[in-house]
Length: 168
Ligand SMILES: C[S@@+](CC[C@H](N)C(=O)[O-])C[C@H]1O[C@@H](n2cnc3c(N)ncnc32)[C@H](O)[C@@H]1O
Image (cartoon, rainbow, N blue to C red; front, top):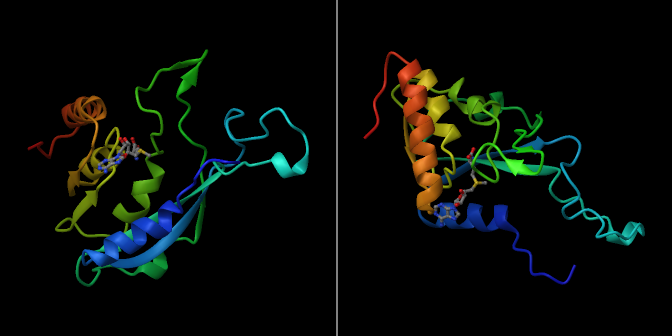
């Protein structure tokens, strides 16, 4: 609707392949009903104005070298409600877009403990927390210090519940 929108998934796929990762697969995350009215109809009820593009997302899976697991065991679609973060107009979670633990769990249930998971857009580090639960090492990269600190705090909380694992 007048703004430039980047086809982010294609761009990320291209970039990752360019730097040497294999693009193994893509799971569609069906988020169910849209949360809030953002991007919906801007107050206009003409069908042309309906733009519910935040009701699903790509989950892109890459490997470095040959994968040790069978990608065909991944579902093509996963239906999962997003995390409820807005309560009475306030974000109680601290991150604008945390994903549910079920998203990274898709992969953790297929791989072995000697694998290392990389989440290059880690946010509140949900991937890292699920990795700790499975006893798998992870590398979590986050651009913003605020989210990085939030992710590390949540990881430390998770670590105190786990008997194994460490942060470095
Ligand atoms: C959709 S959020 C990820 C949320 C995460 N899955 C969670 O559960 O909290 C994407 C994150 O990528 C971060 N980000 C954006 N560009 C980045 C970059 N170039 N390098 C590293 N992180 C980046 C943003 O700050 C944001 O926290």
